[in-house]
Length: 486
RNA sequence: GGCGCCUUCGUCAAGCGGUUAAGACACCGCCCUUUCACGGCGGGUUCAUGGGUUCGAAUCCCAUAGGCGUCACCA
Image (cartoon, rainbow, N blue to C red; front, side, top):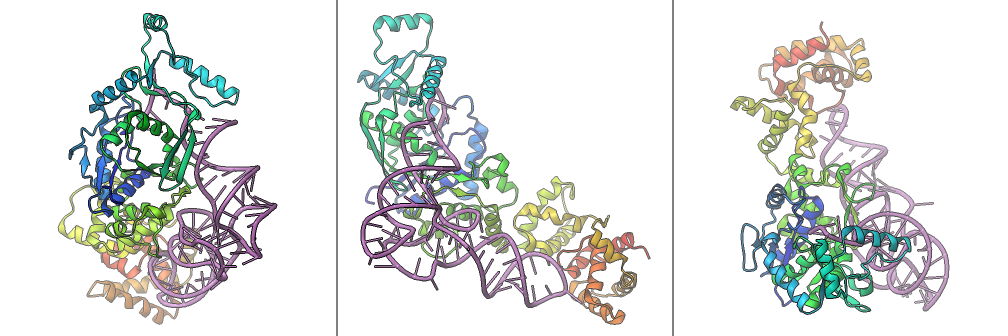
């Protein structure tokens, strides 16, 4: 590729940053970083006045930064081809719309939305393509005056050439062909003077010298409209790459009922940006070797549009969890503890500032459970273990263990021995289990289980000696006595 | 309904006319651990169906089926 790589991510700020959008942004960013002079542009497509919001824009920008996807040009950072908010480019669109009008390539349409809707309905009923039938294509001056007198506000429609084959190149799907008769005359400027997506996107991508348009597959059917506009405006058509959609477990488009869909939600759940980037890259792209774990720098090196899959991919939370766990292994225990604190506060386990000693103790607890965590918020599944001394044994199996005839003797002896431990740490507590086993001549299970249950209320969990160490002598006795007063 | 895209283990996927059809996640089993998790080892009727082309097809072609997208004065 001799030309400069200029790619863009152009979200519409109409909601929290979606995980699918993050993947589109990532692929663009990766391509820009792969080439020496590549540029990644962030443009905000805010022409939907009803749904766009500043909050959404901030959310998108924050999420991009959090993921490590920085942009070379665009909102906030500027650049040679700004402005980068579409609403600040209205005069530009207006100029090109006028040009098309002057050249007869576009015309005013006075049809109302109701009329258009009725027309579409009728066409669909006849199994025909629901495209605009060209009612206003050739209005006389009188007709126009009449409509104006009615107070109708016109839209501007593009006069799509008929009987033409519209072609373009798609890096993922190859050479694409569409019949222009299936496109119809479409609106390029709304009655309020604001351009429609298909129009604005073409002008912006052309003026911003975008070389490759990488976006989600849902835009594939829009592309013929854009291509005819590129032609009409005399712009060069960029290379497209339509990447497949990300689906939920039931194979429908990712939505709220599939769980978390926004980058922010994953962030809040305690997923790491490196893991999300790694996971997203592997969703639709495959490396040439068997590597699974990629740092973002490794991705830049290995990534190639040649190996982007055509088929949609199901979002597999299990794999994300595994990947995130891999990245969490590299974190310090202090860091993991810090990640957990907001969740602990939110659930009422903590109420704010911790003393240095309390913090140190919590870190020791984290050390014991960290291998069990796939993401930060999972800490909560273990919070009772540490914070809640009010042990309640609910499980029937656990009750049975406590009802065993050897249980009281085990507990009693263990308490005696624990009471006399000088160095109260796991290394010195661990031998006690063995001693109890020996002295009472019972199996290990008969020792560990009743103790685990009286101390934690559960049959399973992290290393018991470690838990005892972290809880400290008093709390351990308190818990045991509550469950099994002797 | 029209148009379009897609179809290899449950999931992500490698594969580019000749392979025992990789690998990863998940799952199952075993080991480690007197628990669980981590880790290690091992396991599994996967090329949607039907026709071609070819000595030979997961790979090429055509149908069919299914999934998805899109047909807005939303992006």
